[in-house]
Image (cartoon, rainbow, N blue to C red):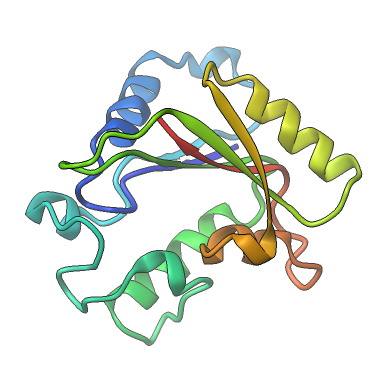
Length: 164
């Protein structure tokens, strides 16, 4: 399982939840690999940049799968994609940024009915949130769910975008 948070520098709930998980998980009871990225871009987080990277003014959600020889954001996403591409489960945690108040919800990217959709929905229902939404890839502006769902990649298993 891979858990990503802190994609946007102004989101604090996801990094807090990821840090708490790191502190409380017992590695001796894990079966498999757990990769937790509490803050994707320390540059954006430390500068409290809400959407764009302060280094290259790019929105990292739109540069998947990245490029190791590209801009800061391209290289960052290339490194991250290499780390999460084989995960059986992928959680992409987000939150309302400094001036936003959002109701907790989980979005499940959907390509077609079947085992992947059912596993993703089961994972989504494990969260105690008032809303779980199925969103077609056409309705999903974020590149991560698209990249991990398309037939070309077949790399990521059940995946969610959760607002915590």
